[in-house]
Length: 425
Figure 1 (cartoon, rainbow, N blue to C red):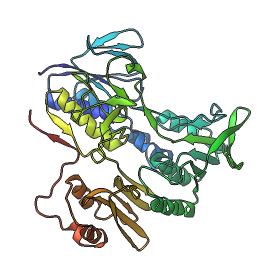
Figure 2: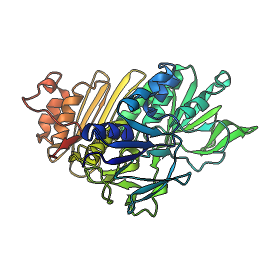
Figure 3: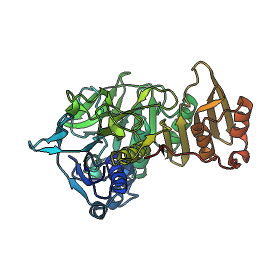
Figure 4: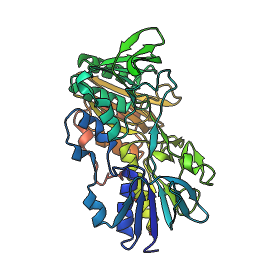
C-alpha cells in the first residue's frame, strides 16, 4: 500500500489538505497536484478582507511555496484536466498528455453561477472567486463609487460590508424574501438587514434584477422588475457556485449535480475520491444529497479523502450547514437547519434578550439546528449536543438557550468529534 502514485486535481483547500493527509499516511508516496489555477493554495475566504485593505496579499495564501517542497508535493500549475479514464486509471490534460495514477482525488471546486440577465456581458460585471476577480472589481478605483451585489448570501453580505469599509456605496439585491436562505430564518434576516442599513449598506429583499444597463460597453446601472434603476459602476454576482464536473461526463463516475461520494469520500469508481465544492455528500440530519460548499467542509473532506487514499479507514461525519459571520459588528452563527420553522414535528425554543435573538429547532428531542444573532455564547456547547444527538425535553432546551451560565457546564467526557473519525486501519 505504501509508495503509491497519488494524483490530485485542484489546488484549493480540499486538494491541499488531502495532500497533507496522504504524506502523513504514506511517507513514500508520489503526490502530484494538477491545477488550472496559476496561484495554488489561495483562499477565496480571505478575498473580501484583502479588498477592504485589511490584509496584505501574502495573507491570501494558506500555504506558502516552501510547504510543497518540504512535503515533496509536485504542483503543475496552468494544467487543465479534460478527462478521467477510470478503467485505465489515467487523466488526460488539455495539452494531450496522459498521466497514470494509483489513487485519484478530484477537487476541482465550483464555478460561480451567472444569472441569465440582459447586459450580463457588459464590462464591470464580475463574480468573486479568485484574486483576479477582486482586482478586476477594484480596477480604476478612483472612478468607482457605487457597487451593486446581486445575491444576499454569505459571500455577498461579507463583500458588502468590506466594500463599505473602503468608502463605497453598496447595495445588496436578493430575489428571495430573506437573506442567506441556508443560514437565516426571516427574523434573523430582518435583524441583519437593519444592522446593515444602519451601517450605510443598502439591502433589498424579494426583488429581481431584469437588466444590466451599460454605457459605452461599461455597466452604469441595474434595472429592477418593479421599474426602479440603481446606478453603479460595478455589478458583482454572488448567487452561489456549481460543481466543476463537465470533464467527467461519460467517465462512468456517478454524478448528481456534483460527484456522489460515500462517507470515505470515495466515488463509485474504486480508488477515485472527490472532496470540496465538487462533491455531493449526505446531510447528517436530513440524509439528502447536499453540496456543502464551505471552507471547513472542504478541509475536512480533503483530510478524510487523503487519509483513505493512503490506506486509512476514515469516515466523514457531522455533515451539515455550519457558518459564522460578523457583519459590521453583529455576530451570527448558524448550524444545521434553523429555518425548519414550518416542518412537521419541529419544536422551537426562542430567547430574545438585550437585542439578541437565539433559537433552536428540535425534532423528537434532538437538536437539528440553531441560530444565534448578537449573543453567540455557548455555540460550541450547542454544537456538541447536536453532533452527539443528545436527547432533551423542550423545557430543558429552553433552559439551555436562555441560561447565561448552564451552557458552559459541560459534563465530564462530553467531548465530540469535529467531523471525521478513524474506524481502524
